[in-house]
Image (tube, rainbow over all chains, first blue to last red; front, side):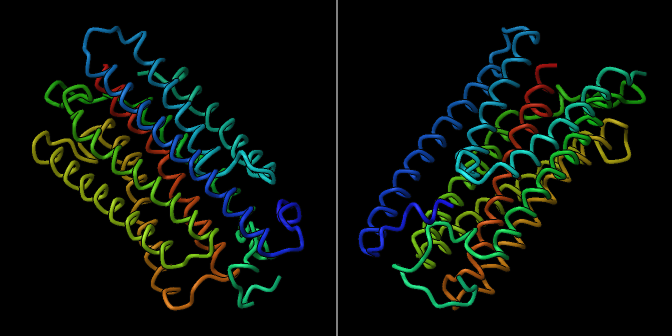
Length: 111
Length: 209
Protein backbone atom coordinates (compact mmCIF):
# COMPACT_ATOMS: atom_id res chain seq x y z
CA UNK A 1 0.00 0.00 0.00
CA UNK A 2 1.16 3.53 -0.77
CA UNK A 3 0.74 4.30 2.92
CA UNK A 4 3.75 2.34 4.04
CA UNK A 5 6.06 4.09 1.57
CA UNK A 6 5.03 7.46 2.96
CA UNK A 7 5.90 6.66 6.55
CA UNK A 8 9.39 7.66 7.63
CA UNK A 9 8.64 7.26 11.32
CA UNK A 10 8.76 11.02 11.80
CA UNK A 11 5.25 12.47 11.52
CA UNK A 12 6.51 15.99 10.72
CA UNK A 13 8.59 14.79 7.78
CA UNK A 14 5.70 12.62 6.61
CA UNK A 15 3.18 15.41 6.66
CA UNK A 16 5.43 17.76 4.71
CA UNK A 17 6.16 15.11 2.11
CA UNK A 18 2.49 14.25 1.74
CA UNK A 19 1.37 17.86 1.46
CA UNK A 20 3.93 18.37 -1.28
CA UNK A 21 2.78 15.23 -3.08
CA UNK A 22 -0.90 16.15 -3.00
CA UNK A 23 -0.15 19.72 -4.08
CA UNK A 24 1.77 18.25 -7.01
CA UNK A 25 -1.17 16.01 -7.88
CA UNK A 26 -3.56 18.93 -7.63
CA UNK A 27 -1.41 20.82 -10.13
CA UNK A 28 -1.60 17.90 -12.58
CA UNK A 29 -5.36 17.80 -12.14
CA UNK A 30 -5.73 21.51 -12.90
CA UNK A 31 -3.65 20.99 -16.05
CA UNK A 32 -5.88 18.08 -17.10
CA UNK A 33 -8.93 20.26 -16.48
CA UNK A 34 -7.50 22.93 -18.79
CA UNK A 35 -6.87 20.27 -21.44
CA UNK A 36 -10.42 18.92 -21.05
CA UNK A 37 -11.87 22.40 -21.57
CA UNK A 38 -9.58 22.86 -24.58
CA UNK A 39 -10.71 19.54 -26.14
CA UNK A 40 -14.35 20.50 -25.55
CA UNK A 41 -13.82 23.86 -27.27
CA UNK A 42 -12.25 22.15 -30.31
CA UNK A 43 -15.15 19.67 -30.52
CA UNK A 44 -17.78 22.43 -30.39
CA UNK A 45 -15.82 24.56 -32.87
CA UNK A 46 -15.56 21.63 -35.31
CA UNK A 47 -19.36 21.35 -35.30
CA UNK A 48 -20.02 25.11 -35.31
CA UNK A 49 -17.96 25.53 -38.50
CA UNK A 50 -20.43 24.05 -40.92
CA UNK A 51 -17.83 23.59 -43.68
CA UNK A 52 -16.26 20.27 -42.67
CA UNK A 53 -17.82 16.99 -43.84
CA UNK A 54 -19.54 14.64 -41.38
CA UNK A 55 -17.17 11.85 -42.41
CA UNK A 56 -14.35 13.79 -40.85
CA UNK A 57 -16.12 15.59 -37.97
CA UNK A 58 -17.83 12.55 -36.40
CA UNK A 59 -14.72 10.36 -35.89
CA UNK A 60 -12.76 13.48 -34.89
CA UNK A 61 -15.12 14.54 -32.07
CA UNK A 62 -15.46 10.91 -30.89
CA UNK A 63 -11.67 10.77 -30.58
CA UNK A 64 -11.64 14.05 -28.62
CA UNK A 65 -14.33 12.66 -26.28
CA UNK A 66 -12.30 9.47 -25.71
CA UNK A 67 -9.16 11.47 -24.86
CA UNK A 68 -11.11 13.69 -22.50
CA UNK A 69 -12.61 10.68 -20.71
CA UNK A 70 -9.13 9.19 -20.26
CA UNK A 71 -8.11 12.38 -18.42
CA UNK A 72 -11.26 12.20 -16.31
CA UNK A 73 -10.70 8.53 -15.39
CA UNK A 74 -6.93 8.52 -14.88
CA UNK A 75 -6.42 11.94 -13.28
CA UNK A 76 -9.73 12.97 -11.69
CA UNK A 77 -10.74 9.44 -10.64
CA UNK A 78 -7.12 8.47 -9.81
CA UNK A 79 -6.98 5.37 -12.01
CA UNK A 80 -3.30 6.14 -12.69
CA UNK A 81 -2.54 5.41 -9.03
CA UNK A 82 -1.45 2.04 -7.69
CA UNK A 83 -4.18 -0.26 -6.39
CA UNK A 84 -6.56 0.29 -9.31
CA UNK A 85 -6.13 -3.10 -10.97
CA UNK A 86 -9.59 -4.37 -9.99
CA UNK A 87 -11.32 -1.06 -10.85
CA UNK A 88 -9.67 -1.16 -14.30
CA UNK A 89 -10.86 -4.70 -14.82
CA UNK A 90 -14.44 -3.80 -13.81
CA UNK A 91 -14.51 -0.70 -15.98
CA UNK A 92 -12.95 -2.26 -19.09
CA UNK A 93 -15.16 -5.37 -18.82
CA UNK A 94 -18.18 -3.09 -18.68
CA UNK A 95 -16.84 -1.11 -21.62
CA UNK A 96 -16.27 -4.27 -23.68
CA UNK A 97 -19.85 -5.49 -23.15
CA UNK A 98 -21.15 -1.96 -23.79
CA UNK A 99 -19.22 -1.50 -27.03
CA UNK A 100 -20.43 -4.86 -28.36
CA UNK A 101 -24.00 -3.77 -27.59
CA UNK A 102 -23.47 -0.49 -29.44
CA UNK A 103 -21.89 -2.32 -32.38
CA UNK A 104 -24.84 -4.73 -32.56
CA UNK A 105 -27.51 -2.04 -32.30
CA UNK A 106 -25.92 0.20 -34.91
CA UNK A 107 -25.18 -2.52 -37.47
CA UNK A 108 -27.84 -5.21 -37.35
CA UNK A 109 -30.90 -3.11 -36.47
CA UNK A 110 -32.53 -1.24 -39.34
CA UNK A 111 -36.03 -0.25 -40.43
CA UNK B 1 -6.74 1.68 11.87
CA UNK B 2 -10.13 1.93 13.48
CA UNK B 3 -12.90 3.77 11.66
CA UNK B 4 -14.11 5.82 14.65
CA UNK B 5 -10.63 6.78 15.86
CA UNK B 6 -10.07 10.51 16.44
CA UNK B 7 -7.28 11.52 14.09
CA UNK B 8 -5.08 14.59 13.75
CA UNK B 9 -3.22 16.16 10.85
CA UNK B 10 -0.26 13.99 11.73
CA UNK B 11 -2.03 10.66 12.10
CA UNK B 12 -4.33 11.14 9.09
CA UNK B 13 -3.31 8.43 6.57
CA UNK B 14 -2.18 9.18 3.01
CA UNK B 15 -5.07 7.16 1.57
CA UNK B 16 -7.98 7.64 3.98
CA UNK B 17 -10.33 6.22 1.34
CA UNK B 18 -8.65 2.81 1.65
CA UNK B 19 -7.38 2.68 5.23
CA UNK B 20 -9.95 0.40 6.83
CA UNK B 21 -11.41 -2.90 5.67
CA UNK B 22 -14.82 -1.30 5.26
CA UNK B 23 -13.28 1.46 3.16
CA UNK B 24 -11.47 -1.05 0.94
CA UNK B 25 -14.70 -2.96 0.40
CA UNK B 26 -16.58 0.23 -0.36
CA UNK B 27 -13.93 1.31 -2.86
CA UNK B 28 -13.96 -2.03 -4.68
CA UNK B 29 -17.74 -2.38 -4.57
CA UNK B 30 -18.25 1.10 -5.93
CA UNK B 31 -15.96 0.51 -8.89
CA UNK B 32 -17.87 -2.71 -9.60
CA UNK B 33 -21.05 -0.62 -9.63
CA UNK B 34 -19.42 1.84 -12.05
CA UNK B 35 -18.59 -1.09 -14.37
CA UNK B 36 -22.30 -1.96 -14.33
CA UNK B 37 -23.25 1.66 -14.96
CA UNK B 38 -20.98 1.62 -18.00
CA UNK B 39 -22.98 -1.27 -19.45
CA UNK B 40 -26.26 0.44 -18.57
CA UNK B 41 -25.38 3.71 -20.26
CA UNK B 42 -23.78 1.95 -23.23
CA UNK B 43 -27.02 0.09 -23.90
CA UNK B 44 -28.98 3.34 -23.68
CA UNK B 45 -26.53 4.92 -26.15
CA UNK B 46 -26.96 1.89 -28.42
CA UNK B 47 -30.76 2.28 -28.28
CA UNK B 48 -30.50 6.00 -28.99
CA UNK B 49 -28.19 5.46 -31.98
CA UNK B 50 -30.52 2.83 -33.40
CA UNK B 51 -33.61 5.02 -32.99
CA UNK B 52 -32.14 8.45 -33.75
CA UNK B 53 -34.40 10.43 -36.12
CA UNK B 54 -36.84 7.51 -36.38
CA UNK B 55 -40.11 9.44 -36.54
CA UNK B 56 -43.53 8.44 -37.94
CA UNK B 57 -43.94 11.38 -40.36
CA UNK B 58 -42.36 14.60 -41.57
CA UNK B 59 -44.15 16.85 -39.05
CA UNK B 60 -41.67 15.70 -36.38
CA UNK B 61 -38.50 17.69 -35.73
CA UNK B 62 -35.23 15.82 -36.34
CA UNK B 63 -32.04 16.05 -34.25
CA UNK B 64 -30.28 18.62 -36.46
CA UNK B 65 -33.15 21.14 -36.10
CA UNK B 66 -33.84 20.39 -32.46
CA UNK B 67 -30.56 20.89 -30.61
CA UNK B 68 -29.03 24.21 -29.69
CA UNK B 69 -25.22 24.55 -29.63
CA UNK B 70 -24.85 27.42 -27.08
CA UNK B 71 -27.19 25.75 -24.57
CA UNK B 72 -25.29 22.47 -24.76
CA UNK B 73 -22.01 24.34 -24.44
CA UNK B 74 -23.08 26.11 -21.25
CA UNK B 75 -24.37 22.84 -19.73
CA UNK B 76 -21.07 21.14 -20.59
CA UNK B 77 -19.00 23.90 -18.98
CA UNK B 78 -21.12 23.76 -15.82
CA UNK B 79 -20.69 20.02 -15.42
CA UNK B 80 -16.98 19.99 -16.33
CA UNK B 81 -16.29 22.73 -13.79
CA UNK B 82 -18.26 20.86 -11.13
CA UNK B 83 -15.92 17.93 -11.76
CA UNK B 84 -12.92 20.16 -10.98
CA UNK B 85 -14.51 21.55 -7.81
CA UNK B 86 -15.05 18.01 -6.52
CA UNK B 87 -11.36 17.29 -7.24
CA UNK B 88 -10.55 20.28 -5.01
CA UNK B 89 -12.87 18.88 -2.34
CA UNK B 90 -10.95 15.58 -2.36
CA UNK B 91 -7.63 17.48 -2.23
CA UNK B 92 -8.77 19.07 1.03
CA UNK B 93 -10.10 15.75 2.29
CA UNK B 94 -6.61 14.25 1.85
CA UNK B 95 -5.19 17.23 3.74
CA UNK B 96 -7.64 16.64 6.62
CA UNK B 97 -9.44 19.94 6.09
CA UNK B 98 -13.17 19.27 6.52
CA UNK B 99 -14.19 22.92 6.26
CA UNK B 100 -12.60 23.52 2.88
CA UNK B 101 -13.80 20.14 1.64
CA UNK B 102 -17.39 21.10 2.49
CA UNK B 103 -16.97 24.47 0.82
CA UNK B 104 -15.83 22.90 -2.47
CA UNK B 105 -18.55 20.27 -2.26
CA UNK B 106 -21.18 22.99 -1.88
CA UNK B 107 -19.73 24.70 -4.98
CA UNK B 108 -20.01 21.36 -6.78
CA UNK B 109 -23.65 21.09 -5.72
CA UNK B 110 -24.44 24.60 -6.98
CA UNK B 111 -22.90 23.88 -10.39
CA UNK B 112 -24.73 20.54 -10.57
CA UNK B 113 -28.03 22.21 -9.67
CA UNK B 114 -27.47 24.85 -12.37
CA UNK B 115 -26.83 22.07 -14.89
CA UNK B 116 -30.03 20.31 -13.87
CA UNK B 117 -32.07 23.52 -14.07
CA UNK B 118 -30.76 24.09 -17.58
CA UNK B 119 -31.75 20.55 -18.56
CA UNK B 120 -35.28 21.02 -17.20
CA UNK B 121 -35.55 24.23 -19.24
CA UNK B 122 -34.21 22.42 -22.32
CA UNK B 123 -36.72 19.56 -22.06
CA UNK B 124 -39.69 21.88 -21.53
CA UNK B 125 -38.49 23.94 -24.51
CA UNK B 126 -38.50 20.81 -26.73
CA UNK B 127 -41.95 19.82 -25.53
CA UNK B 128 -43.54 23.24 -26.00
CA UNK B 129 -41.76 24.48 -29.11
CA UNK B 130 -41.32 21.27 -31.08
CA UNK B 131 -43.84 18.84 -29.52
CA UNK B 132 -40.87 16.52 -29.09
CA UNK B 133 -42.08 14.34 -26.18
CA UNK B 134 -41.38 10.94 -24.66
CA UNK B 135 -44.30 9.42 -26.59
CA UNK B 136 -44.21 11.47 -29.83
CA UNK B 137 -41.75 9.14 -31.61
CA UNK B 138 -39.20 6.37 -31.13
CA UNK B 139 -36.59 9.11 -31.42
CA UNK B 140 -38.25 11.02 -28.57
CA UNK B 141 -38.42 7.93 -26.33
CA UNK B 142 -34.78 7.05 -26.89
CA UNK B 143 -33.62 10.66 -26.41
CA UNK B 144 -35.48 11.26 -23.14
CA UNK B 145 -34.52 7.85 -21.77
CA UNK B 146 -30.79 8.41 -22.34
CA UNK B 147 -30.50 12.09 -21.43
CA UNK B 148 -33.17 11.83 -18.72
CA UNK B 149 -31.38 8.89 -17.10
CA UNK B 150 -28.22 10.97 -16.95
CA UNK B 151 -30.21 13.88 -15.48
CA UNK B 152 -31.66 11.53 -12.86
CA UNK B 153 -28.10 10.50 -11.97
CA UNK B 154 -27.20 14.17 -11.50
CA UNK B 155 -30.28 14.66 -9.29
CA UNK B 156 -29.38 11.58 -7.23
CA UNK B 157 -25.78 12.83 -6.89
CA UNK B 158 -27.02 16.19 -5.60
CA UNK B 159 -29.18 14.47 -2.97
CA UNK B 160 -26.36 12.11 -2.01
CA UNK B 161 -23.69 14.79 -1.55
CA UNK B 162 -26.14 17.11 0.25
CA UNK B 163 -26.98 14.30 2.68
CA UNK B 164 -23.28 13.59 3.29
CA UNK B 165 -22.52 17.24 4.01
CA UNK B 166 -25.50 17.67 6.35
CA UNK B 167 -24.94 14.38 8.15
CA UNK B 168 -21.23 15.02 8.76
CA UNK B 169 -21.22 18.78 9.20
CA UNK B 170 -20.20 18.83 12.86
CA UNK B 171 -18.36 15.55 12.85
CA UNK B 172 -15.20 16.57 11.03
CA UNK B 173 -13.27 14.00 9.05
CA UNK B 174 -12.56 10.47 10.21
CA UNK B 175 -11.95 7.13 8.56
CA UNK B 176 -15.67 6.37 8.78
CA UNK B 177 -16.84 9.25 6.58
CA UNK B 178 -13.77 9.98 4.40
CA UNK B 179 -14.41 6.90 2.18
CA UNK B 180 -18.04 8.00 1.81
CA UNK B 181 -16.97 11.40 0.49
CA UNK B 182 -14.39 9.78 -1.77
CA UNK B 183 -16.89 7.37 -3.32
CA UNK B 184 -19.43 10.18 -3.85
CA UNK B 185 -16.76 12.16 -5.72
CA UNK B 186 -16.05 9.12 -7.92
CA UNK B 187 -19.76 8.98 -8.72
CA UNK B 188 -19.77 12.67 -9.61
CA UNK B 189 -16.81 12.25 -11.98
CA UNK B 190 -18.53 9.28 -13.59
CA UNK B 191 -21.58 11.44 -14.30
CA UNK B 192 -19.21 13.77 -16.10
CA UNK B 193 -17.70 10.88 -18.07
CA UNK B 194 -21.19 9.95 -19.29
CA UNK B 195 -21.98 13.58 -20.14
CA UNK B 196 -18.84 13.85 -22.33
CA UNK B 197 -20.29 11.09 -24.50
CA UNK B 198 -23.80 12.56 -24.39
CA UNK B 199 -22.71 15.98 -25.62
CA UNK B 200 -20.56 14.35 -28.29
CA UNK B 201 -22.84 11.55 -29.50
CA UNK B 202 -26.28 13.09 -28.95
CA UNK B 203 -25.81 16.84 -29.38
CA UNK B 204 -22.71 17.39 -31.53
CA UNK B 205 -23.25 14.34 -33.79
CA UNK B 206 -26.95 15.24 -33.93
CA UNK B 207 -26.12 18.67 -35.27
CA UNK B 208 -23.64 17.32 -37.81
CA UNK B 209 -26.48 15.23 -39.25
